[in-house]
Length: 455
Image (cartoon, rainbow, N blue to C red; front, side, top):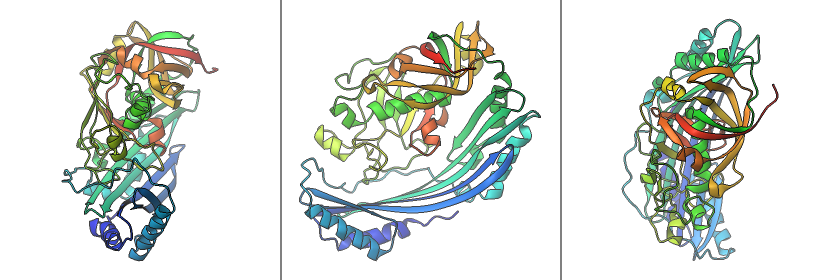
């Protein structure tokens, strides 16, 4: 896979911006090339490559904003899109909240691109899948996805902002299912680098879960001690992100932080920040408005410190943009916290389980939603590895359970934390969001189970 490069992305939009008939204008270019290999029944059945470029331009006349999108980087097409955006602005009402386009500022360096990963071919992806299939014992079969992705982002505006950053991502997942009983086990790896993906380890985790997942029991509704593995914790953090970590949700009173900044909202064991510049995560150093991204301390030892901002929410709240504007076609305005880092600890998986007298181990969640954003409440089901823990040992497989619980209550009950690992929630790993987490597994005092699926 090859990069288009800074000149190819920035050149056309900067040229088009020179002649725009508007008071202000900007353009965001996003190119994504994804190579995906899918396998089922321990055999590859599909290879696909997509390569898309999207250009979103804004033209501002007075304080009225016009927006147009195109898939072309030809100067004439970008110029035409800007002219159409300016015409829309002239026909629109002024936006009194408009903060102006970003001013030029130094962009931090980024380590989000790995050349060898960008050169990964289908044969290399097939070898990773083959390693998983070879590690799956007789009586089980594997399915899943290998994905290599290159993104390139560029932002330019009429004030002189010109920013460009490439990034790479490698992803491998395995769902191992039994051919003799209804058991399943799931595992995945996520990294900026292909050499950060370990197929044999992915297979071992999924196979272990599948082997344990037999003769399922139903769990009565109630409160239980719980061990949440990293994928489950990432899902909890997604709920916190979409319900309460953006400044607009705080301003409108929809966030758990509203009226509580500076107050304790969880236990001291919970610290959360957003840091796209951490070399361990997947992030670029500026947002879609061209503002440099800042590290933001969201919750410090249980105390709410504040949300992330885009330019509009920062103006409305008398703050400074933290560089967290996001694609408005996918995310709510006001700032999107998409590179979350949760402080971890030193507990091993065995130590987390040993700390439970009577409770559950949860591998991951499925179709999580939030009925009460103010409390960061989440509800959904577990999937591919839910187990009963008694006296510090896994003793039985459980039917998938339904839960309703507040993320704040869960983090208020943290008793042990393991080491951090890069993970995404279920929605993001299926292309329906973008929250990447450096996250530990955790043991909590109480999780509320509201029911079990049929056996």
